[in-house]
Amino acid sequence: MSMLEDDSLKALAAALAQLDAGFSALPELAHTSDPRIETVLNEVAARLAGDYPYFHPLYAGQMLKPPHPVARAAYALAMWLNPNNHALDGGRASSQMEVEAVAALAEMFRFPQHLGHLTGGSTMANLEALWVASKLAPGKKIVASAQAHYTHSRICGVLGIEFASIATESDGRMSLTALRAALEEGSVGTVVATLGTTATGAVDSLDEILALHKEFGFRIHVDAAYGGYFTLAASLAPHTRAAFDAIAHADSIVIDPHKHGLQPYGCGCVLFRDPGLGRFYKHDSPYTYFTSGELHLGEISLECSRPGAAAVALWATQRLLPMVPGGEFARGLDASLTAARALHSRLAKDSRFILPSAPPQLDIVIWAMSAADTAASSAKARQVMEAAAQRGLHLALANLPVELFPVGTWAGSPNQPETVTCLRSVLMKPEHAEWLDQIWYRLNEAAQS
Image (cartoon, rainbow, N blue to C red; front, top):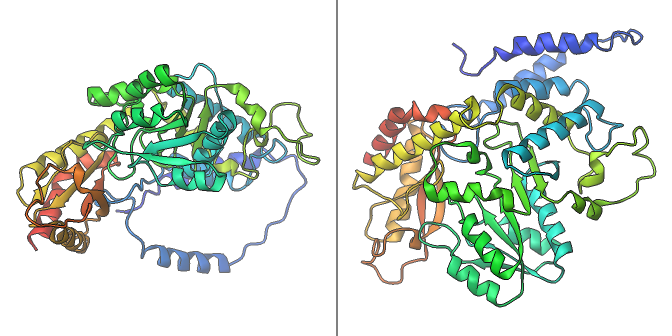
């Protein structure tokens, strides 16, 4: 039995034959096979076999989810043409597929109208959103929670925008009290709400941030790079559900289809609720936009050349797995939530592990090791991670504030560090729910060792 899915290769071969037939009116083109290709590819395979088994359910560490077979095959099929979605000149069909795929994402978030496009990932998508925000509120500060991705502060540094970090509560969400205090200073132009932080999966209270917006007036950008697709999930906790239900009122959204969207890297997306913001992208190109009077995606993007194959893969995946509540795609998200809650429940019953004050909000579980102080707890976490890897289970580590854990957890030692190294598991594969016994067996052995 093959460990790697390869049935899609047959479908890819058939689709490639159909694509080839679509160009049959052209003069015949001779192809010369190169036997060295097989040799080099075998060398590549040997090198890649030394990587982590990201495709397997026993890889439960970082945010790495294998692309769906249809996405992988569609991407490969498009690479026989290698379209460039900067302009219709370089990607006529793939550009239209991008427009349709992005529209489907906007519909998922219930945006009544939108302006948006794909990017190489959420870093570029967030850069565009914050760049536009700075144009709308020049000289104003951008704020995000202390648990938000570091990319926001770094982007602000690149753009020359003042950035401030807002404290979080014990559940990892942005503190509304601290946010109000920052807003009362009158210098905040944009608030970044994170729906699914990278470290813990915390979901900022977007619905309550919107209430502050009515009082103070500011731009709201939602960084849903990781958690955005969970708007389709049926089993979110009420507080988390309320945050996702408020997304349609945001000014801009970022999501990463190459995370929960089953896409190859890199595939991010930025969406603006106001299509008129395209005026900030306006530019002239003396050699690009001439084959059509329609909008070229390069006219609403800071990036120039962009892979049309990414759009083709996303379009194909959405065609196979529509993004609707209760559908096959949405049920996969709920399976991940089930797996995270089940692991959290088992950890809670074992005195060797210390859980944070709040349960998982999405599919990320964090826990510390029981020890007299944070230094010993951190050392144990690193040892357990190594021991688990020796048993085929791959976890991750995260340095997190001790405030996320119950008060007094490590009260016995003075001069405690402000952070503790924790074990972290991202259960983002639907199969994780079925593999929980295997995961727990290996984790238990690793902790015993």
